[in-house]
Image (cartoon, rainbow, N blue to C red; front, side):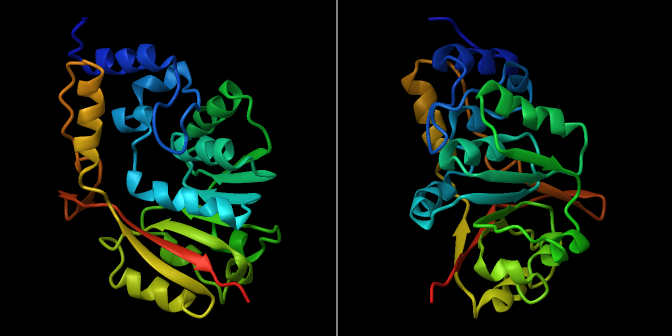
Length: 244
């Protein structure tokens, strides 16, 4: 069995083992564009990334998700994954870094997915003027969620399921602020990072006889505070719209 040691070798080995497809989780079978192996994490390639959300994605199958808005498209993992999973009538993706738009598009082209639109930065004015029906809103925007989540200011959010990665290191009392805003219209669930995710990834890699030592959590989550690198853990909130 070939031994894989460098980061490049690790990812290339996974590419070969899974024939360019995500191996595990709700996005199983989604093809990974060749050019993205150099920027994706091992957990994304395996399909284990933020596995704490996997049960939630299963639950949403019962919510008739047909129109999706995603704020923070980043490398396209969730953009393509949600499209692949729910086959929505349309998914609108906000990503303020223009250079990442082609990266996001590469997923859709590789997997022959359609009905998507990529826009620039999500803004308060844009959300105020939003008129399209939205079944699911997924947000990861490094603290700006406190500006974009408000069902009083953005009426359409009252009828929208919301998944948001919260960044309380940026905004004091953030959980309480968001929960209070949505308490009348939504059921609220807090979801925490699964700290056994690394063990599960390591088990998969060892099961495939790949000599890859995987022990990374949570060094992919950090912010700069007063010039210092501060590690954080993942914290999510599911705002489930109430049915009358």
